Image 1 (tube, rainbow, N blue to C red):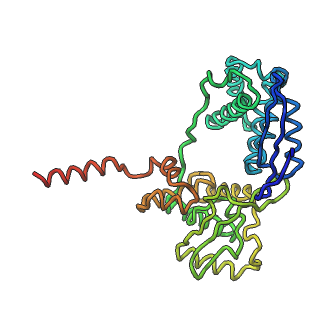
Image 2: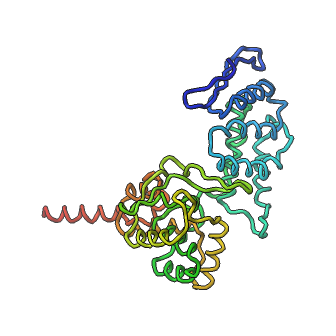
Length: 357
């Protein structure tokens, strides 16, 4: 039985093969969307298994992409594939995967440092680190599935930085100044109101429909996200399972959205904001230019929302639930914004100690 379907409608490839030593082995891999995908995987695997020395890096990288595609979101796959096919494969190309050395990796890292973006600037340290991680994933895959060893990435230090650029946020006053500047366009006004006061992601905003609002309860349901794939507009699931959530809106925001939707000719399941992320970016540029407020990214409105909640004294657990994150992610990402709990603990212990004297 080379392929069969599971209860979750996913397909599994299960087959026997002989490795390069002639030993009979069984391969089992699940998670394919269709039977054809599972059978294609079997064929591809048998073509490459047992001949690692004759596999070029390009073949190995494409085999890795073929392996991960059924198991990750299409948007994540597209980003991964774009990085690998434009910044990793072109350097190693047809070089035999088993012949790539740590020195080759170092030369590739130097090549990355020489690349420039379309605006003439070098790529950010965080992007360089992401490329290093993608290359490591390919070689880990080669080591695990095809026995290519030693893994050249293990002896090379990753370049770039795991830390992103300094977080930019707006205060409430800065946001009000910006909002006044874009208030001449209703869709812009209400879009930015939701981004700032609800802390939702851009894709979540652009997927909203009137039926997502429960004005009697004052809540907003987040259960989908909007994305563009080429010229195609796609409404899919939100970023993670944790992203499915119901957000309690402040009263003024609920009243504003209720009034706006009552006066708009929008069907219950029709998208409210028939916009794009590029539109929001351009409106951010326009509003900052008119108001004189410092330029931040649209996504930084989400950071601004978290910053507000932290300064209001809410816990990482409560904030994580509202934002669709695990609490540890909130703690790690926004640790510098939380009060110094260690000092507070020491002060409290000091007070207790003094009471004993």
